[in-house]
Length: 190
Ligand SMILES: Nc1ncnc2c1ncn2[C@@H]1O[C@H](COP(=O)(O)OP(=O)(O)OP(=O)(O)O)[C@@H](O)[C@H]1O
Ligand SMILES: O=C(O)c1ccc[n+]([C@@H]2O[C@H](COP(=O)([O-])O)[C@@H](O)[C@H]2O)c1
Image (cartoon, rainbow, N blue to C red; front, side):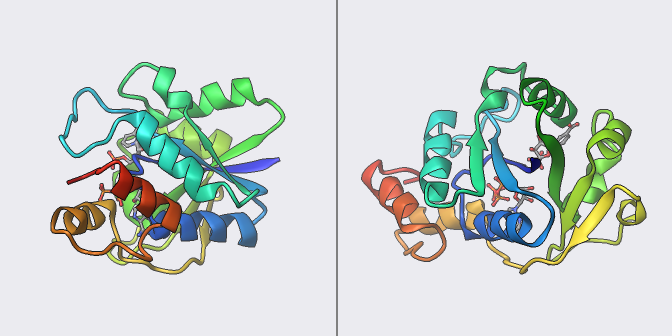
């Protein structure tokens, strides 16, 4: 199977993430998209970052009814901070039957040259890039293993959602109902 990997904190997962993942899974040769939930980075501890198990739980609930979307907690047991190339290698060892690619917003291409072994990521895995509202042109877009995929632009972020919750404002339609209910029940981000 061709599997696209979508990395993130998902604090919480929102419609911006879900629409990209579903668009990638249904308009390319990717058979599935897996959300790779990043653990708490020991160097980047922020008060609003929920425990990794709670973020994973929200992702799993959000995608439960979509057979093309999956989630993995593989980085929870890896040395922190986890480098993307190490996770790609680990996943390829664990699932030799799958071919993994990296899904990335155009904005992340700006820093991509500084990533650990980014040449190996390009050569052995490849990138599926989607447009973002604000991002500069990147030379990586013309690389033979970089594919630009058309997807809707949704200018929404987990930061914006957390701010709305703290201000007691509605986040309806910004996250799936099951995620909104869990956030409310567990009093997350208040
Ligand atoms: N609205 C969106 N549309 C497309 N991609 C997004 C959107 N929001 C975030 N992403 C991308 O999804 C990946 C995971 O995102 P992340 O979990 O950091 O969410 P976030 O909404 O950017 O969070 P935060 O606001 O807390 O930084 C990142 O590569 C990020 O660039
Ligand atoms: O592997 C790397 O060198 C690397 C460097 C910076 C970022 N990343 C990955 O890119 C994603 C977004 O990172 P950040 O720092 O913008 O939250 C996240 O999944 C990181 O693991 C990866």
